[in-house]
Length: 237
Image 1 (tube, helix red, strand yellow):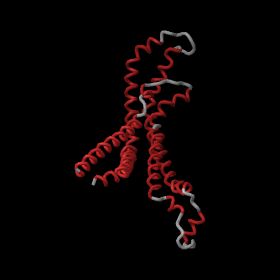
Image 2 (cartoon, helix red, strand yellow):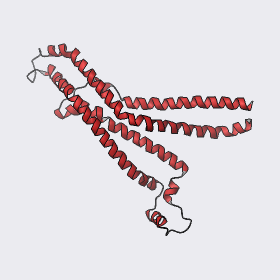
Image 3 (cartoon, helix red, strand yellow):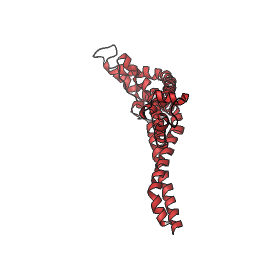
């Protein structure tokens, strides 16, 4: 048993690492990715509520800013940004909903395109021959000829291509669902104004969540592997 455990140790560790990576990717793809629209929407709403309280607290200071009447404009440069912040507060709920709908629509379209071209990309990476593949499908190819596309989709390649597909979907989701925040935060640039709120400095909540999920998966995997090694040691003794 000791010799068997020593011989199977490196291979077992490698296979266990692949299992942990697969579980982590599956958790992100199956649980985190569908939650991304809800996460970004809730954090956008919470940022809007915080901006309202920010405006309530800042009203006295904004009123004092009207005392400075020098410079350009009717209200002066000191109070101009306050009006744009109020405009941003009134526009933000509509912009959040618009960004939410736009992000889901864009994500659905991009994933649909990805599903249609992903097999073509894999075939090109594996040296796909269109003429040979057509001959194999019609049965005119010589007997025993293997499909290049099937060769490219071996067990190992299929695992890594699946992982790449999950990663691409996750990155597409992050880039699309960020529109829920990006549109309200940057829409005033079209008016030549740049004002910042609390929400712009809050960071990316979905990115932090995905990182924590993957770290938790690795931690649980290490604990399970340590427990399994202890059981094997007891059996060997």
